Amino acid sequence: MTSTVNDIVKQANQGSVAAIIQVLNEKLADSGIRTRAIFADGVLQILCEAAMAEQLEPSELIGQIRHTLEAIAPRNIRRVNINSRIVREQQLLWLDEISRDPENQLLWSQEITLNKPNILRHMLSEWQQNAAPQKTGLPTRSAGQQRERHQFWRGLVGGASASLLLLLGGWALYSWLGTPKPQAIAPSTSPLPTSPEPPPIQSPSTQAGSATKQDDFAIAVRLAQQASQEGLTAQSQAQWLDLAARWQRASDLMASVSSGDERYKTAQDRVLAYRRNKALALERASQQQAANLQPTSESSSIETVPNKVPDTTSSSNP
Image 1: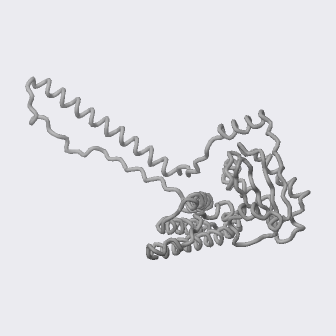
Image 2: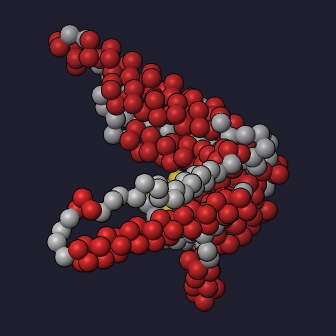
Image 3: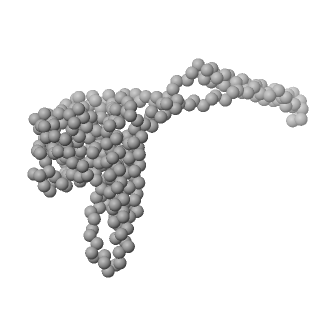
């Protein structure tokens, strides 16, 4: 679990918006605040939502976000615009909404500039991350397996030695007789010593299951990011159906996160968000199918639907 947290922090340091959101949500979970974010025009736009305006007090919230982001030191991100509003559901394109009507959409908005990290400290941190040995997590061999392995090698060496002796004996007999007489060389009737095959090393099923569960969350986030990006250019019914299938896959992966995982609550929230995105993609596919069935003469009356799918950061952090 510690290695997974370190991987998320490392991804956030490299500039991953999804990882930055996850770190911020974990830091602000006790305050009842959830965040969404998107990187646009060189500015990291962050939306903070809570049930009550008192939870979004700017004097404290801005300091917490600044401290967290400066500790992460994400690459190529210096300007951050913090927006706040009362929580609203089913408003996935939130950046477009607040850009069109910021006065009615937001409680307040504040842009900050992150301080540059100390160059020596930053280089030391990267060197430690690159120099840290990667633990494979493979189980060590038991005493019985090591004993069988030794027996295998002893048998292999013994068989090779016996074969070499037979070859030398045949060559000596051939030289002594002076003429090649293959029939005079009696094959050995005694079988060569056999050696037991070493049993395959199997990892415990519990460790394999645990590793799979730890990976499901990250895989779901990557699928959601891909679906969100491709939704910006989707046009045909087949493309919308493919996006719906990806949102369903991401939702299923989030649902498989166990209740003992510290990200379980976040995963459950994202299950609902991904399912809503799937429903929107299916609706767009139905609209595209209906448009394709219209007669050519009526094509001018069909309203063009913007080919946009909610960004991953908003849907994965509802």
